[in-house]
Length: 89
Image (cartoon, rainbow, N blue to C red; front, side, top):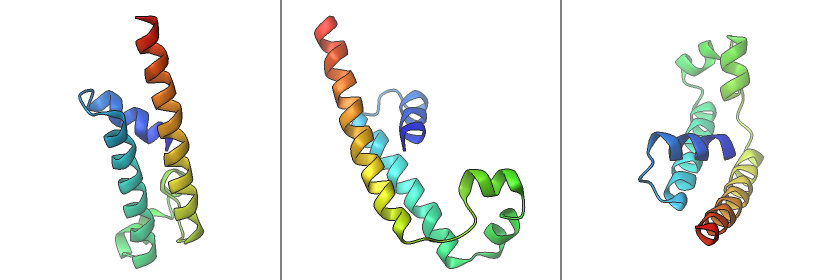
């Protein structure tokens, strides 16, 4: 979640922090759901070690808990960083 949120913040610098985290969370959950659907394209790509490492190769419903927990932690950390940088200006 941290990498995705930061990447979205860099690619779309006008996004507010909560939108970057929400976008990363949404994309991550969509990817997990695609694994559940077992789309042939995704299953073929899972044979590629790089793809399997980056995007996973199986559906695990427990992952959603970790995604939401990660999004919450990232949101709190980024808000703290934002406040800290505002105080130093």
